[in-house]
Amino acid sequence: RLPSVECVCLIQENATGLQMIGMTTDSKRRSRQLKVGVSTTQVRVVQCRDAEKGERVFHAIFKHKRIPQYE
Figure (tube, rainbow, N blue to C red):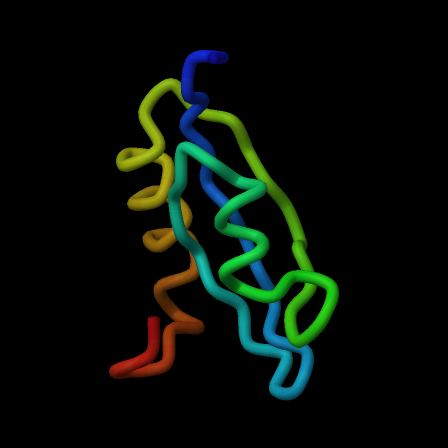
């Protein structure tokens, strides 16, 4: 089995255009869960040594666009 690779994923919801920032160690599984190609579009997957920190950085960059109570 291959070692897990931490990633930060940016996924866009097709119906609304809203984007989600999240982290995972299994981007293929996460893509299936989020229905990428059906109701969402994968914008970007960035491999990181520390996905938790990477996710925080992306959230800080896009803080001004965040919708309250939305992931």
